[in-house]
Length: 130
Image (cartoon, rainbow, N blue to C red):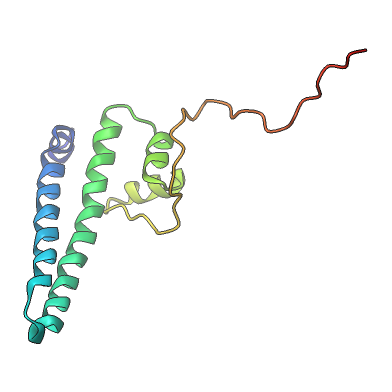
């Protein structure tokens, strides 16, 4: 196992990234306290913090996927959790970069076991009184 996989399994990389993300959110929020004459500069600085946050979150997501895979979670289950098609998640992960999630996601993902059959949607005829 590579050092990166060991770190990811222990959550070291992910925790560090999450701590950095928290710092970036706090810095972005602090830009709202700028005086009126500096609001334009503050907004540009906030945009920079948010761009860093977006990039960092993709790496943190990759760390979480690595951790889950090392704990035998399936690609299908991870895809449901990340609200990504399983092929997209696997392709992004296999490419070795950060994982990026688009905006076209379900607001309420279905966390039922993937092998469970959905309830029937057709109505069955009631038995006749004959």
